[in-house]
Amino acid sequence: TAEVDLSLVVRPRLQVEWINMVRGSHESFGGAPDDIKADFYIALEAVKQDGYLLQHVSEDLRDNPDLVLAAVRADSMKMHFGPGTLERERASPLQLASVKLRSDPAFVRKVLCLQGHGLAWVAEDLQADRDLVKIAMKQDVRNLQYASLDLRADKDLVM
Image (cartoon, rainbow, N blue to C red; front, side, top):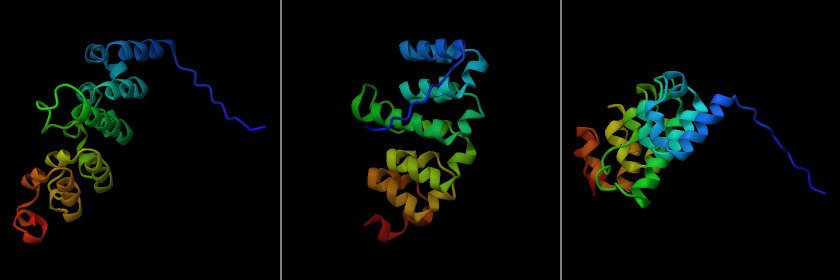
């Protein structure tokens, strides 16, 4: 017989109500009280529905890499498979992330692998990182416009 690991998560009633409300109508998150917007699990459910709800998340949570990556993943899925593709073509939930995350090379690499156009929103020194720019350009060559001047002039990179 196989062993099964089972975990039970007990959540406060209010948290469960908000998670269910966000699942039913993710737009409701925008009008939620600040303490709800600061709850990781409720915010996670919201950004999984629409990455741009990251704009309503508390400042502290915008520094959470798991939450921001969930927002980027949700946005990437919408861009490829959902309505609004053209209007959001150059935007990214990454622009709503903390400066700390937008300056973290390892985090930025993960984002660019999911959503190449995020290069526009990363720290300036990372726009000069040849490897990160190559990743972004592999997604979309138009990302060259967000690279540093030196990299834009680099014939080896452009070719």
